[in-house]
Amino acid sequence: MLFQLFTFYNWTVLIYFFVLNGIYLFLTIRAFLEIQRYVHHLRSVNLKRIFELGFYKPLTVIAPAYNESATIVSSVHSLLNLQYPEFEILVINDGSTDQTLEVLKQEFRLVPSNRVYQVKLKTQPVHAVYGSLLFPQLHVVDKQNGGKADALNAGVNFSQYPLLCSIDADSVIETDGLLRATRPFLEDKLVIATGGTVRIANGCKVTNGRVTEVALSKNPWVRFQVVEYLRAFLFGRMGWNNLNAIMVISGAFGIFLKSAVLTVGGYRKDCIGEDMELVVRMHRHYRLNKIPYRVVFVPDPVCWTEAPEEHQVLCKQRKRWQKGLYDSLKANKPLFFNPRAGVVGLLAYPFFFFFELLGPVVEILGYGVFVFSLFMGWVNWPFALLFLSMAILLGVLLSASSLLLEELSFRRYPKTGDILILFLYGILENFGYRQLLAWWRLIALLEYVIGKRSWGEMNRKGFSTSG
Image 1 (cartoon, one colour):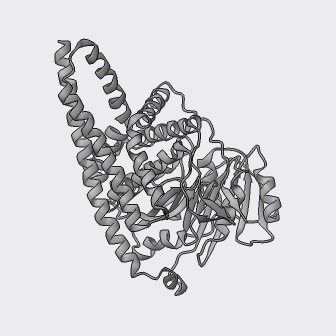
Image 2 (image 1 turned 180 degrees about the vertical axis):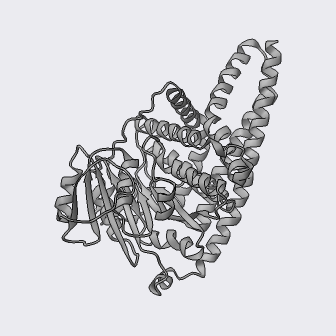
Image 3 (image 1 turned 120 degrees about the horizontal axis):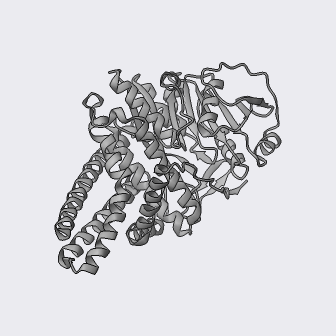
């Protein structure tokens, strides 16, 4: 009986493996075609000319900040350097206990402001509002701590423009990032949200809030993450783009139609992954109410962010992401295999449930079953080695495809040696790193189930700066 269960499990895992990689192959092909089409189209578009002619929507940049004193100055300078015809910057100091507010006051000469705003979303109390004597478009809202979602909602309340750009306070946006990311709103009135590619800034040089020199970090943890980010954004996002089924817009950088955010009730404060949950809830509202809409991914590298350099911090980050995924899917269960939700309900939501949420359970359980079957003498070695080789080969091919597409389309890493190093890490990640991530994600699921929702803080070291 035990052997029959073992055989059944093996066949189940085999089917799971082929379905997963079949979807990956499908997304990879779509991503290749979509990015090549996008790059070709971009060459014929003069972004600056379009905006000079007045075809733009004013925009509010919302940057929540909690204990971000290490990176907040670089981030705000980056925002001030952005090329966009009409925008304002709202830094939301969410009850920081470090020197975040003091650093902002000193660097940007902040003074109290009597800015008027409407409370459309309930938030924690606001203590004070400041304006900059140096930069009239810069405002800082000092409020009681309520979490990132609460800070974002406060930013929505204070915003004066129809588009909202939510970013992490430790992020640096490309100078023309807003121009590129808002273009879909000009081309299609149905667009309610856009997201762009987020790159890792560790190892890069930041001068006056701009990434002036792109280089690969020497930290192995960071190098593994660079490969992950390339794969996730170039294929994970781009593959879903043409299907209008993007489930995630990174909290590091996203642009939303303000009216759409208010329609669905803003960011949920009881959700760990507020950025993903908002996007999934938008899909749910618009799909189930049969309202035409589009969520668009822009593959341009428009944002740079600091990645964890220590495994303890990386562990906290990935556990938070996994708990946020659980939160987002659980909060929007009506989408699950709902034909009224179209491709989101029938393909995207099930993919995230079975392969992203439950993936670590299947993987770690598989390792345990293999060890047990090894002890029982049930291992079919030719089959086991073939299966392992295929899994590694497909993973390497996906990573290599991401690097190739990056090199052909955007070429942000100027040194050929950096690309070769990343290719090597795309191989090495299959031998320890991937398993470690699966273990952390499994622990996160177990913690979530027993009610442990906290995840700790990510300590920032700041960017390598000059100027």
